[in-house]
Amino acid sequence: MLHALAFNIHGWKGMDRRFDVERLARIIAGAATDAAALDVVALNEVYHPFVQPDAAQPLLARLAARLGMNFVFAPTLPPGPFDDPQTAFGNAILSPHPILAFAGHRLTTPAGHPARVLLEARLLLPDRRSLTVYATHLDHQSEAVRMGQVQALLLWAGRDRGRSHLLLGDLNSLAPADYVGQEDAVAHLQADAIAAHLVRDGMQVLPRLLKAGYHDCFARAGQGTGLTYGTAQEKIRIDYCLAAGPLADQVTACRRLDDDDVRLASDHFPLLTEFAW
Image (cartoon, rainbow, N blue to C red; front, side, top):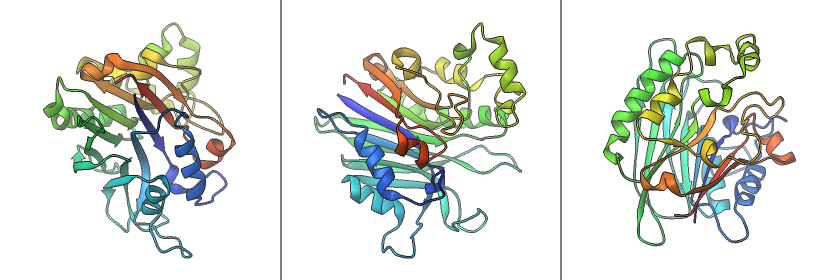
C-alpha cells in the first residue's frame, strides 16, 4: 500500500492564530491507519526557516523530526516581501523514505502575481522502487495564469510521462465534473468574492491535466465530501491528489481528514489518498 497526504497549512498559523507544530504532527501522524504509515506528505504555504522564539529548530525541521521523516523545501518567494514571518515561503515534501533527489522549478508567473514553484522529489520506497512526487500551489487569482503555470508544470513533469508519479497540492482550481447539472452552485460561486475567479475564466486547469494523462483520485475513489476549502465555511474542492502512469489504476480511497484539530489547524482540510501499489 502507498499513502499520500496533501495539506495546505496556512503559513503554519491555525485559525486560532497559533503556530502549533504538535497539532499538525497529530493530524499528519493520525492520517495513517493502524496497518500502514504515510509514505509522502506534500505541504503548501510553508514558511522556512521559521523559528519560534522559544525553539531551536525551524518549524519544518521540528515537524519532520516529530514525524520521523525526511524533508525537502522549495521557496516561491525569497525572504523579505511577504508578511509575518519574514522567511522564505513555498512548498515542502516529507517522507519516511530516503529522498534520492529533489529540485524546485519556477512556474510561469506574470507581473502582479506571486511567484509559484513546482517541487519535485524522488523517493526510494521500501521495495526498492522509486517514485517521483510533485508538489505545487497554483496562482490564487486567475485561471489564465494557472493555465500558464500548468503548461510549465507539464514540461517539467514530462520526464515522467508514462511512469507512475504523483502531483499533489492546492491547485486553486475546480473540477468541471463536480458541477455537472449544478448551475445554481456555479452561480453561487460567481457571486462569492473569494471563489469568483475560479469560474470567471472557465474551469480549464483540471481538464488540461486530465488530458495530459493525470487522474483525479477523488473522482475515482472519493469517500465523503470532497470540499477541502475552507474549514470555517466549507465551499470548494481545490486540493488534489493526481496520479499518472500505472499508479492511477491502483487508487483505492481518497478522502479529506476532518476533526476538531483539523478545523483549527488551517483553512484547508488535508486530503489523504491510498493506493494498492
